[in-house]
Amino acid sequence: GESVGLHLPTLSVQEGDNSIINCAYSNSASDYFIWYKQESGKGPQFIIDIRSNMDKRQGQRVTVLLNKTVKHLSLQIAATQPGDSAVYFCAELTPRGGGADGLTFGKGTHLIIQP
Amino acid sequence: DTGVSQDPRHKITKRGQNVTFRCDPISEHNRLYWYRQTLGQGPEFLTYFQNEAQLEKSRLLSDRFSAERPKGSFSTLEIQRTEQGDSAMYLCASSPRTSGTGELFFGEGSRLTVL
Image (cartoon, rainbow over the protein chains, first blue to last red):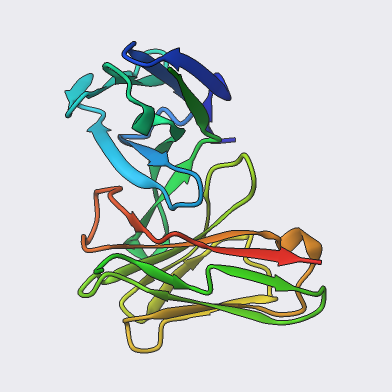
């Protein structure tokens, strides 16, 4: 069936290093992807999105890469800081009934920043 | 604060009892979503409103669950005859857009524990 999943449940990096979080998706018709950050006890927070007509998009300290050939996307965080510690989810925009759309989330990767 | 607010933040109940959660979206957001999140998993779509119309319900939403958005503003999610498997974080999100974007604004969730 269709699914959005992540390769690693936990990623530990040193403060100041770059982080790369990976995500695989199975629906080749997907054309819009989003990364969310969820801190402990809080709701998910939008980080960055990308459409399938792009292979790279940059934000502030974050970059999302999309490889449609292998149905893979990644989130790169530059110079990670303690405040980056969170669970990161990739999500896929899914057409739904009534002309609506909704997000299908993967399981998440827990990013741990070591001092 | 003009973000999405949810109430209560925590609810502990005994199996078989009914519970109701409330969500106040960001004002003027016409789209409202309910998601459920269990430990270590990404949020799972439950249902969606555009204004007061409930446009889709997930198969996860059994007949014990009902959601309303009577005036197109706040929404309630009621769970009748709760079961231990209902224990989860119930997340509400809203969006101002008509389609084509995944930028949902999430509340901090209502955590349900069924004993």
